[in-house]
Amino acid sequence: MQVYLDNNATTMVDPLVVKTMTPFFSEIYGNPNSLHKFGTAAHPAISKAIDQVYTALNAADADDIVFTSCATESNNWVLQSIYTDYIVNGDKNHIVTTEVEHPSILATCKFLEDQGVKVTYLPVNEQGIVESHTVASFITDKTALVSIMWASNETGMIFPISEIGEICKTKGVLFHSDAVQAIGKIPVDLQNIHIDFVSMSAHKFHGPKGIGALYIKNSQALTPLLHGGEHMGGRRSGTLNVPLIVGMGKAIELATANIEETSAKIRAKRDKLEDAILELSETFVVGDRDNRTPNTILISIRGVEGEGMLWDLNNGQIGASTGSACASEELEANTVMLAIGADNELAHTGIRLSLSRFTTDEEIDYTINHFKDAVFRLRAISSSFAKQKPTEGGEVQECELHHH
Image (cartoon, rainbow, N blue to C red):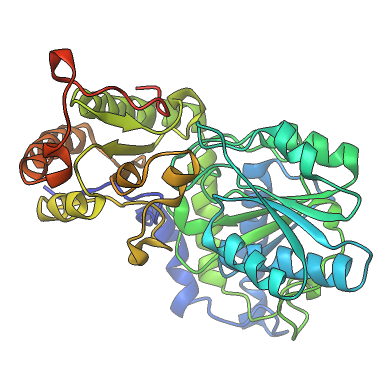
């Protein structure tokens, strides 16, 4: 059996999405900016895809949703253009973000620091989230932007976006969220929350890779990242990628239809897997499952190196991860684990398991069996685990950081 449990890295494209995209490669292939019938033939499909995204997120008609190549582009666009519009050509000099953002936020912030911008990287609490009062205390009259993820790619923990939005509104500061890990997993209602910019990516909700979007509240001004033609109302140049736009529209429609029901089914499978792994001694899951996206587990197993576990799972045809795929080639201690205060040894043991709506009960049962066997195998050869001194009853004292 093959089991894919790395859905926070990317997802399978839903076959219905592939079917919807297919005609736009070799049948309706004109450039939508062309004036002839080959170009205009694509217009209804693009309009429909835009409507699907607006509906899925409950965006208002006055808001703008601009297609980009991915959320990395959307994130760069917001940060770099806020720098241009409010720092270079304004009187601001400060950005607030967190220690646990996606590399596309953190690396852009580091780049902006080299240009002289002051960036505050907020710490997370033991649950792995930033508390709203922490955000409030670091906003100054020089703050141009607050950028905080909606949900963590590594832990699945959901940040208090609504409260942070109200703080930013009160203080008159622009607010951006990288919502890549939230959209399609939990309900996102953009008229119910004060937020200026939201980044998203289709391949995280069973759409194609290479297409994302940026939501812009009230269609406010934001200098383009890419200059060129008048595509997307002059906001984002480059020939519209019609098949991918159509695919993203269909994918977000499918991912958000009956989201409560779908999430409950995924959550039940996730909880079954999590409960089974937690039966093993000295296993710790990061964060409260009630405030987590329904598909995600970040688990540490004392005495088991994350990379060793990945290798063992991979031999068993199970795909998992030690954290963010965009940073996973570095094989360093998990930054989120370190941020919540785990010791260095424990931070090297983090394994992320992320399910999707295509994950089956049979796959979960298979994974539970293989995972438990792998832990016994790897602990048997672990030098760090052998040194542990168990307390009465054979269990080592529980790590205070984690609720299990």
